[in-house]
Length: 228
Image 1 (cartoon, rainbow, N blue to C red):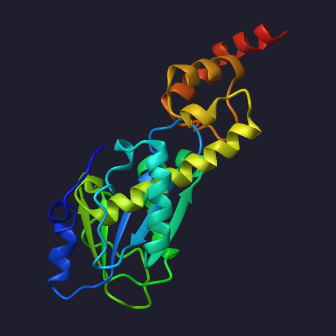
Image 2: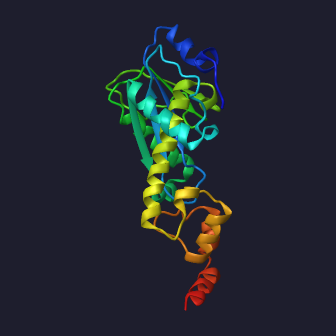
Image 3: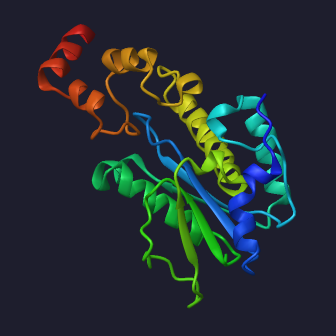
């Protein structure tokens, strides 16, 4: 089990706190890689004095621990906002722009206006003005691998991951022939075999290469013949 140090995971936040900022929102996403379902983003504002050594990159945590930490974060957070971009939006705008859209929606769903926004990755440029916080100037900072450097971003990554997993668990009931409960739409061998056997559903991302191959007319004809 990974346990982090407060100095390590709050270093970035501490730099802004020392400059007089008090409300820091961490933003991260879950679901860029899957072949099906939405990409989900989360924005989290934590209390200034809060620390939990177990909060880290959600991909490095067990599902059970993620869910436990998600419950803890939701209880102690000053504010949490969640945003999604659908598979249709991913196909329309591409995954990078759809992820940015989901992050913007997560920030817009905050009831508390942050002073600083820490964003995992490099999606937002330094002059980003796509959000309207009632005229309040908000600082944005991209942090590469931020979910391993910032407790705020790591908290957002956990909630985003748990939220998306629950969405895919619901889709598992709607599409029982797909084991979304297990692979959550990621391109595992099992999922690819399911696509080859059953075709695609309304939640699959048609712009993704493995799906495009399945949509090839020759392959579709074979699927049709196999079903007859």
